[in-house]
Image 1 (cartoon, rainbow, N blue to C red):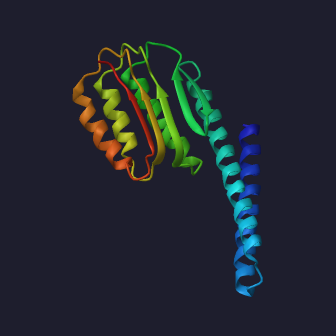
Image 2: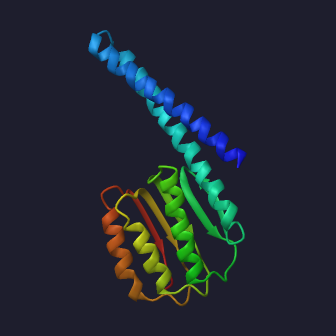
Image 3: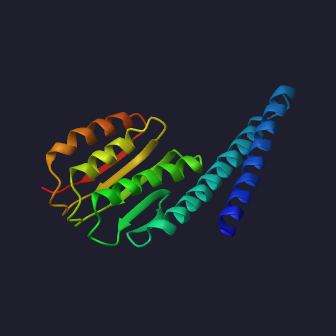
Length: 188
């Protein structure tokens, strides 16, 4: 719990610095004293701070998910993406549904609904059925969730059929405005 409090305090401090930068930019614009280079420098610093805050929030999300799901999933940050890899092949639909709900709750709690990427790897999970894919589609259809990259690996999940892919396709279409990379790997 102390780590979460430290993360939250650091995030709040970085947010405060970011707000100060934004105020500085606004003040300087009002006074017309900002050279083009100064604006670029301030903008660059602002983007760096945003990136740092994003990274810290994502690390906090990983820690929160790892506490509950480490028996079932390896949770990590991979190239600024939230990455989950199954560590067991006996995951069931109920666990997948619970995991997806937990992911959304933790993302909302950390105000991190715009992700660079989301990777979920559930290969060889023999108990997952179309219900899991429909639950995933529901999660991806969440209006406030925005993804740039989406990687879904469900190869070897023999109980999955084409029936759930229509829902998933519609959810992906909803993400299409922000989506830059899409990789799907499902059973043949």
